[in-house]
Length: 403
Image (cartoon, rainbow, N blue to C red; front, side, top):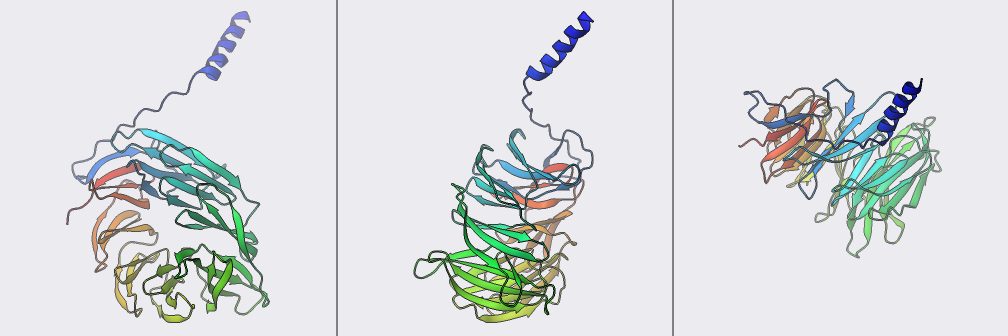
């Protein structure tokens, strides 16, 4: 009994006091000869067992270190890990774990992490939490956007199908000093409001103007759904214009509208229709039904006089910014397009594979299939001619194709 007690105390004393070992760099797995584009690939975890992962996004910070997300859904709960590695040594520099990400906004080397009720700001060089706060219970999935040092978060309350109200919150990313600038509530017709994340610009008087959509729900009304587009003067805290009922088309689009300040126009997508409005008055200039079906606005851009989007059917489409004329429509991937990004004259996105297309013609120029499905988009380092992408099993570093 005496010796048993000594062993018991020794074992638990060692477990309680033993320091956590420093994580060593993960050795890259050798690539096959046919994978000549792969510079290295490393496992996301110590084992390669299948996991139900959610890849949110990835980026390179100012020290050219790769920051990427690993999210797991299911029992016992959802969580999200952000990991930062040295791309030369593959050494893990820092990790942060929170609840499931809804969205994030990156300004310099700071990242605002929107987890619904919980909000954090991280330093992307160190992984340190700059500030942390939480809001009261909400419904639905809140989304966010940013402009300069300002971050915006929309918080729905009540039923996710018909929220009672939406609080439009704003903060400086350095301070996390959240304040509600206005609330969208049920209107005189009986429609509830659900404000989505805004885009912003500075007008001729130097005022900051926010442009955003307000979804209106009325389950007992006809029509039961409509979309409004609004402009709000943040400097003077008053509405500039409101375009009521631009569409009754049920829309899943949460991305902010796109603005061309020089042409004084604002562009907006519902699931199947593209719109152009006057930036100063909200008057409609043109609208175009794509005829493609599917969610158009998951990723959309203004680029070189063209309004571009890739719908959730993998169709890459470009419209003339002036007239709305469809310039091209080219099939790319399947049905899970994620995080399309434009670098130079190329657009990159993941959809089980990695795809690259020419932004001038819409033609697919390159694709790559790895071990598992690529998700969450890519991070491109044009200076070193490489890109980074992740499947459910591995993190890849690949050569940028030469053409």
